[in-house]
Length: 187
Image (cartoon, rainbow, N blue to C red; front, side, top):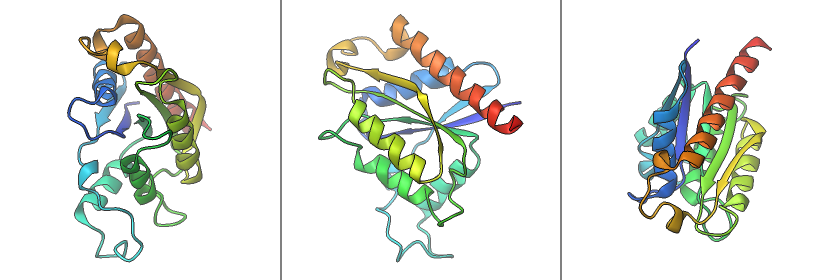
């Protein structure tokens, strides 16, 4: 069974270390899994029920929903902005949670990982992301965690895919998320 994992990155910065982690996940995906890095979160307007109407959903939001519906699982990469989840990631969750009762998450497995400059690697933002996506209908796999502290120095000259420790941890994250898709399908 081929598993499609949609990767959503909470940083729009071109040199984002969380984006680099997502790029590494794409390269490190085990056989039978495809990690797809979603492009276009910057184009999705802030969620507003007035524009979330049949026939009037903005194209960028509709494209995000379509990509999410085609996914078997989700892998969020969250930096920490002022101690919490970045707005772009929360906005994506809001769009994917609708229409109410029929959102794109639909009980699909979700893991949240990330890196941040601080000493805890963004754990507050990752916890907030898990909470929001769980409320929005995702099946958050609580024991799949990876918080990498000191991103600015750790990845100053090394891409995460070339950091043996990070590559091994990220490979395990993707493999475990992949395995949870199989478990969900068998249930």
